[in-house]
Image (cartoon, rainbow, N blue to C red; front, side, top):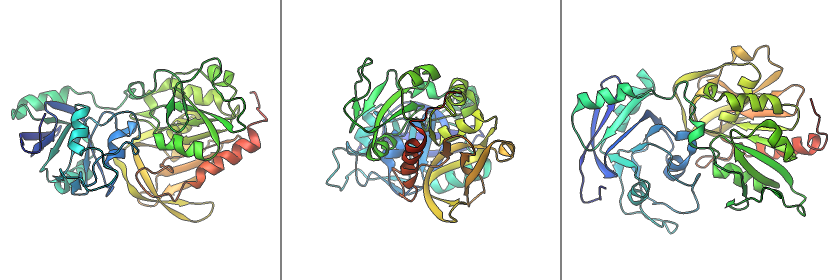
Length: 386
């Protein structure tokens, strides 16, 4: 593994033959993935640990990384999820009272490659023009042809179920962190808090923190949990989480959402929003280079207000496909007018494409968790069985 004093040459090779040269600051070997960029100025730890980045090599547009180190509180999952990390310049001496280790140590801990010295402005502009594409980071060879062959053999993320790589293996309770659950008694009977089952497609921890803060008992279950098994848990509401990859490839979750709709209040974020769109017979499509950052403007058409939002998605619900769906379209991205939110006209269900829980990013949209609670209070006890 590379140390700050032992730089080794590294290549980033894209599927169109473009080659970027840099040096390692962590890890060694090769890493394949879809190459994308994130425009956040801070929050690299949250980006690294967000399960929605599974299968991707992430380049940060902000030129410095490592300045405030890594801490134990800002994890968004139990491990690093990205396949590789690309920055302009790595800072090895963190300056923060919260830091417990360096960014390089963190990447090395999970066997992930970090490279610096790449012209990230040129990389970002290239992705914006050509689109997100497959790529490989290599520190063990400079044979571009061999690396290109490996990239071409990589299937990418389209039509691939990535959720199975990040969902939990067993249910767990979130109580100020991950807690084992007693299958016979999954809820705290003496707590009056709302019971919310989270369908884990790659959920971020801050979503669970926000649900807990909003007054919920939170039980997280694997993505393949059947609708009946969820209903048997007698939840007051069901949360549909974020996650990685192509939503149309995760057929079992789409069917679960379709079955649960109208039987419990539903709230979906990011992949959960896409799953709701697909469950309503809509379509999804792949964006050219996605929305990834903490500065995306979204308009709430109900209030007319504009929210600055945190986003991380490469797929989107097609507007045209929702024209005949029984939904009201509630939010739109002001950069490209893509769909960012909807609510069912008859059933207690709504979703947003962006991340109201932030981490990293602004908190403009945190009110949506309170909206979910109000939906539960109105409909959660009148459990209409379809």
